[in-house]
Length: 252
Length: 250
Image 1 (cartoon, each protein chain N blue to C red):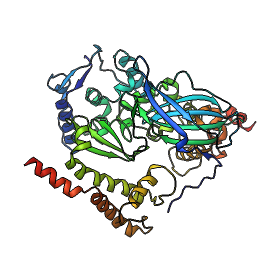
Image 2 (cartoon, rainbow over the protein chains, first blue to last red):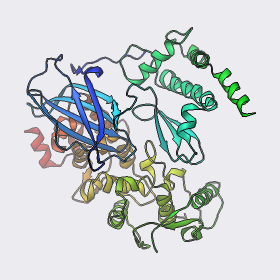
Image 3 (cartoon, chains in turn red, blue):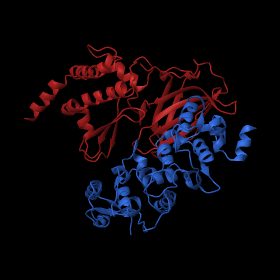
Image 4 (cartoon, chains in turn yellow, cyan):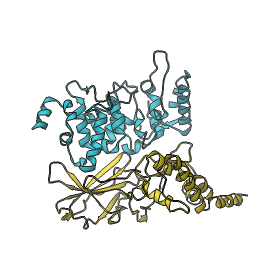
């Protein structure tokens, strides 16, 4: 079992104490608001707060002053990110009194609560992005900071199909579930759902809470069948077979 | 020739050509795809492209930076235009996929010629990669040198290892530290050795490991190259020139 142990003495900012919202200014340019409550961490008043936005190749950093004089920078535009991209955010509290800035507290992979005043699914386990996938309809991207289901933007009404067509759900989501668990348990050897609130633990928690499921086994030989069982339990919970048949009958 | 981009049909024809090459077929270069309106269409902006010869990926990056400046699209949007970059690959195919002594071309994986934007292969397109480093990340002449010294058809280990790591390629301090350690300014080329042996002390691979450990403790984005170098263990000291060695000892 792989557990994350903090040797650095760095404090963790609670996810519930941070909120990011993406908005647009009068000219339609995107910017973000950050609210962060660090009062429970007992950090020095002169420590600096930085926010970093990132997505793939793009990165921007913003100085929010120090703890005793926290202030949002005037320019919080997300001008290095293309229009449809929703970046993730990172908040760092840094001790700059020594030559090398030491990180005192941090929180990574923060999803915005809202985009353009609409809820952004900040607690979603799977993000959806639209891209040119050639002749593929969907693709699961597990190499980034958070699992992303990529949908081919060239498919007519793909957003509607993915969100409401039972056939799509039945054919795609159990397989997505299987691939994510395989990546976590077998490839990354991560089997501890209580480890932290990063995405592998959140997905393991979801699997563990399905009817008849428990923690993933430590033995490699049993892990594949555990994933099979989890995928079956996932399909059963969402009534995949019945809904798929019903959708087919509606076609006839 | 005017700058153009493939249509969907042109893109698929080009992909088909790459697959034929990959199977060992001595297929003719489908140059008609570059101009036939069924397979390609002009880019907005009226940019003219020359058949220049580039001595390195850095040379290409400089050229792209200047040429694409005239386009209305922003660089970070341009890099996602699969149809444009694939057309560019065919336009400069003799340089990104030169024929060997037997007249055979070995194109390698599709993403070297038809980009797959984003992680993990977006930067591995042989034309997009240099443009990303030079223009989009904005490292320009000085800090792009280490990554882009090779011929157009070759992606260096430096580029491969650094450009794939967002926290490295977007961090000026880390880029400066890499340059300080591994670039020979006197001879204007990368130093020999740091990529030869993965486990060797002071190698590029060790640098990546050490930086990833330091990143947990230190705010590397707020540090300069020399400050980052001063944090490194002594195994990296032999890459420093004499003056820097003295400074770090003091």
